[in-house]
Length: 118
Image 1 (cartoon, rainbow, N blue to C red):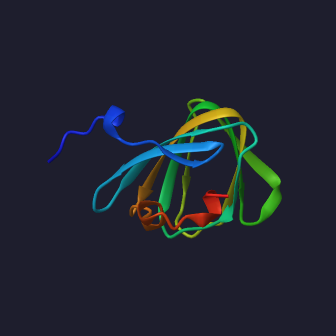
Image 2 (image 1 turned 45 degrees about the horizontal axis):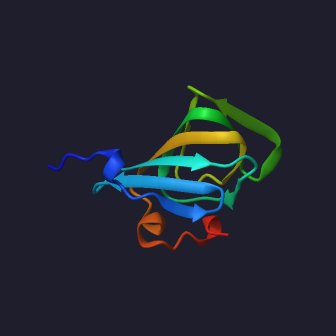
């Protein structure tokens, strides 16, 4: 068992509009993220179940390649995204949020998440 303090977790500057920190165990990962206005997470899916909680700003999601019906999450809102469900997101204003994944995102751990590093 190890005590963890977010102040001691390195900040990964993924791109000019995305910063993240994450911690993980064998079966779960928690990420704290900050995004600049207008950043888009492109269409993607992953095996991991995802719980997103917005702390600040507005995060707009689209699902299943349908851009007709967005879902906007604001401070205090959360959403559960099942594994393998295609989704895309747009940051409206500065967005601070947490994502919890099960299992942990191996592509984030090993840095192979090229779709975010553009």
